[in-house]
Length: 365
Ligand SMILES: NC(=O)CC[C@H](N)C(=O)O
Figure 1 (cartoon, rainbow, N blue to C red):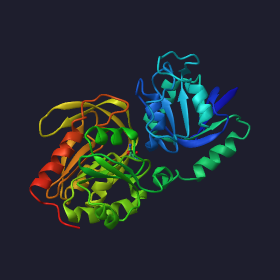
Figure 2 (cartoon, rainbow, N blue to C red; figure 1 turned 90 degrees about the vertical axis):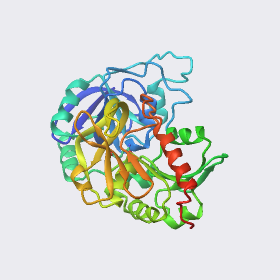
Figure 3 (spheres, rainbow, N blue to C red; figure 1 turned 45 degrees about the vertical axis):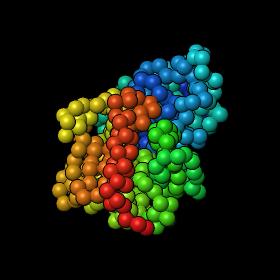
């Protein structure tokens, strides 16, 4: 069956359909990750986005039981050059195509993904529609141009009620802005007693859980669409509770401290983004997925210090609070998918909790 990608600027890509027959709208983005398509597709941060894979063949090892980052994939659609209809891997339980059908996610294949990626790089990300017909293309284009990108994705992907992953170690409250399972796995591996709470939980309710630390998770959309998270963080900062912000959590920490964020032209999405640790000079290869970033100049009048920077374009990639036990990174230390170089960030968080506890810095709630 034929399928088309219609872009807001009037460009139409002709390809073929796989996965769901549904039509879908979304922000068309690209990832350069060569593997890890199951983790990418199930990462809630891709909510309302149509993901183009620049790697030419996707789906070789199928879909398995262990690579889920969330149960319900939030991505709008997927675009590949070629997908493997007959995958082969001992853990694989179905093909990418049959999984997409089951999850009701439409796919487009057989287009020149290099051409599409070049367009996104030149223009910036574009609104697009995966459509099964081009009969009404002009109508679709006009409609896309008239409507803004969707907002408020966090409320769609965040848990509706708190849940507990009991363990014997530090109690960490995870604020779920669209959390990837990988982060919960890394905390559990370090024996943390994890309580996951909805994105709009008031700070007082978090304090009542007596956390040793708070993790602000990744999540979709524009950080400025989550004012409830910003106020919550401002209140949490009064308590000297160790805070680690990751990706959206990092952007929200910056906003809470008076910094600003901006939309990047086409974002950073992939598994090989080099980041420099400004203290040690060391460079780590990191997994990334962000379309927004903290504006470096905006840090001047805040109590935040720049700690990490993207090697490719100088984007802010890490921050540290000058007075409070709080730090944050724009990239993904849990990887999934990607290199494990920055996994020790979770150990840094554990050490910050240990020091804060030892020095008795934490205020009683
Ligand atoms: N992975 C994330 O948390 C992404 C953060 C934010 N939605 C962005 O695109 O920049």
